[in-house]
Length: 408
Ligand code: IZC
Ligand code: ZN
Image 1 (cartoon, protein in one colour):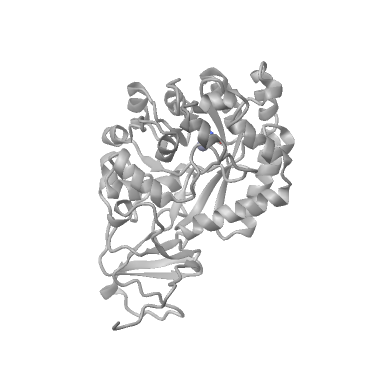
Image 2: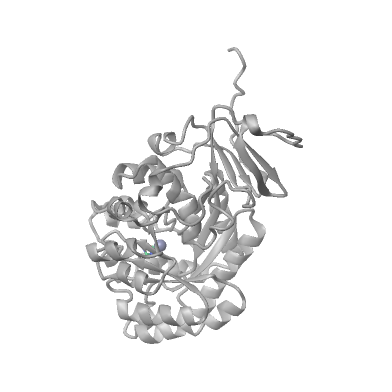
């Protein structure tokens, strides 16, 4: 797995697999990788024997709503009764209920909760995480969320890439005046940039949220302030968010569940990465999944993510999403591995340091209780991580409940 740049289209099915390999780590970085028989002169302080086990780059999680207050388990009953996601939002629930809980929570509470979720992600083999704001929808709370992500990045061993998603929903106080609300959010760009609180700006382009025109103007301003841009595009209604992602040169277009054929064509011809979140279709009980198969067949670089958030995809387990990608998106194991490593890293601007086991990159490596790379999507819903290494340090090790005796 040492290709540079995002892996596009058919190349996603060509995985570089080494049998009987050795990886050397020095100063938190990959120092050498190759066939064990070529690994001469090994003088390691510590070795990890991964015989018979799959070893991969740490998973990169390119789309989460990590920092939030409260939870929304009551909505599950509404969803079971068939109340659509956007109607729950329209009634003041959904994202807006998390907004209330996030406004009420202290910075310390939000940090503690974020660290808990990060621990769980790390235990599931994730070593780099993108985290969005967007549950404040006012200056003060959005800054509180961004500061929590910054603190979490400083305190937690995982690397966090921060995205400003102030344009996640229209708060009730601006229901009739979304333009003014967007201006309040874009007025924060200079400060967020100056304080280095986010690398990307994202917007939810959706029916009842923000239109394509509003999104275009907002993202244009973000680019003028030096941000890379992302879009929650074509998740529920096909508004043309995929085309807008290409037009604005977004680093990624995310969701794309109902992208048009023209949008898919344009995406494939662009450098924008398609970040697919099949856990959302699964969790919202939809039959429609993003046309990821078509996207890859036409040449797109696809990444996959949990979309971890308290409403539409409540899981930190990217391995489960890898299985959903196999079962529902019909992606091959090789495509899925590219989607959760190198392409996910490029989707958050970390392709130079994460996403592959390459000399000079961060030593973010996972040993899995799996005999080969096809095994993870196949054996679904559980945690296969055996040992998670971040920056060359062991971060997580699976504990046996009973030590397995030799020669039982
Ligand atoms: O809290 O429901 N889609 N934003 C856009 C979300 C899902 C997160 C949520
Ligand atoms: Zn999202």
